[in-house]
Amino acid sequence: MLPFLRSLFHRRKPVRRVATARLPTEYGDFDIHVYESPRAAETHVALVRGDLGDGQNVLARVHSSCVTGDIFHSARCDCGPQLHAALRRIADEGRGVLIYLNQEGRGIGLANKIRAYALQDQGADTVEANERLGFPADLRDYRAALEMLRDLGVASVRLMSNNPRKLEGLTGEGFAVNERLPLEIMATAATQHYLKTKKDKLGHMLSSV
Image 1: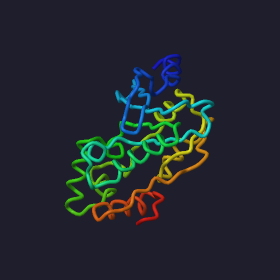
Image 2: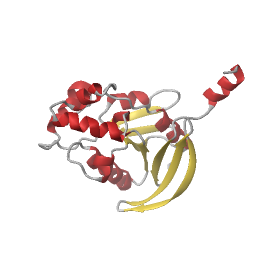
Image 3: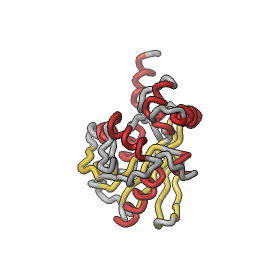
Image 4: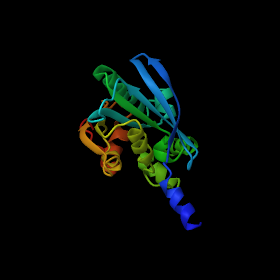
């Protein structure tokens, strides 16, 4: 690649906003912004509640897509309840952002996620299943979320998360996570082992397992 083309490539934002509309929900009205990633051919979403003002200390959730949990209410994970708890908190506060990233199965995609489920049915835990398929335990990347937040005028957040990697991925380059707010869903018989694995092997900050 020629030097000037390489420089241009690296200056391109990983995402660009392509559509915006009002989105009434059961939690109240949000603005929905759709972003596309020209490099990865992915589509991400930002839901914004209220006036973000100076962009400081915005209540935020960065949520990776989970078709099984968010849409079909799978009992294998806590993703769906986390998503709705975050929307409820943002609505109650009247100001905040939820970033919905296209990163199914901790980044391995939907088909491989279902293959991982099949391995879990045979006794593997959620980390072992991804690794047996030839993937790292967690492939997610938060650069797109960081660019989306900046595009929305957000400079610092109070982040709803239990995942230390997410905090690291959103910190630096002039952006700050000023506070971590736990977003813990009580373990059930179906999620106990899954959540304990996330705590023990992925370092998630969970107190109920």
